[in-house]
Image 1 (cartoon, one colour):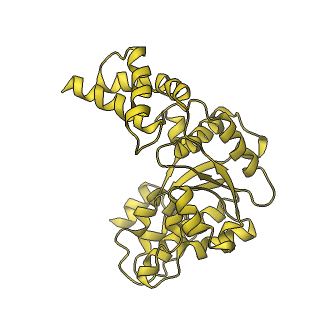
Image 2 (cartoon, rainbow, N blue to C red; image 1 turned 45 degrees about the vertical axis):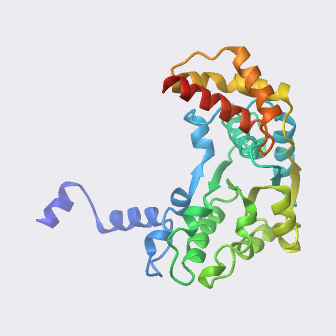
Image 3 (cartoon, rainbow, N blue to C red; image 1 turned 180 degrees about the vertical axis):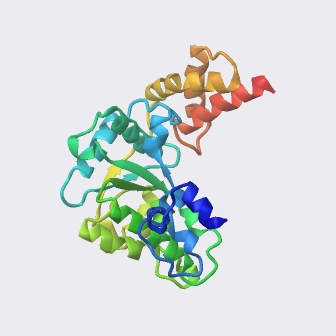
Length: 283
């Protein structure tokens, strides 16, 4: 019988309730889609510090000054939310991954040693949110988890301009307006990333949101720095493709992509060139 089953495993009503409470994170079922509210961060975010511990992140070469600038801003008392501004492919996400790797190594100030960084997946938050206010409910669940972590979680929002107006199609308030009160009260620490044009067009116009962030300009690395970055990544490419990459190939990838691919940016275009060349050899 069920009673016997509970007795065999020493399960009491209190134990079951406590386990459910732990799973729900203290939240109650108050909506038609309660599963969206539980473990929201795991569902709509990626733990970069956990990925760094597992060795899933690519090594970050250079970018020391930008990473130090981000650390300085995060260590401030007010306006402690950095926003990385740079063209697509220059390495904005890599800077945040570099910070996650430094947290794992303990190479950060005392105030950041217990922090974890979650990348917020705006696409996942918006996907399938067809009911009025469903997106709002999902984001609220994420923000509730963040605030309950007592400042241990730093949110990373890539393509930050998408939060201004996100959710409006469903008749809810946009995500930016949900973040602003928490940023103002210091309950949320956030790293944003966007391009200069998108920042001027969307974020800068929203002064209440813009004043909560400190800008960090991320320039395109030069050819010499790109060669160093490719040398750092070459082992990953060699393992994945099962090839040996000569150093002159890395140098040529940086030099030639810089010379002939004018509509994209280093180091992304050079890295793509190496990846494509390795794939071509194997096929």
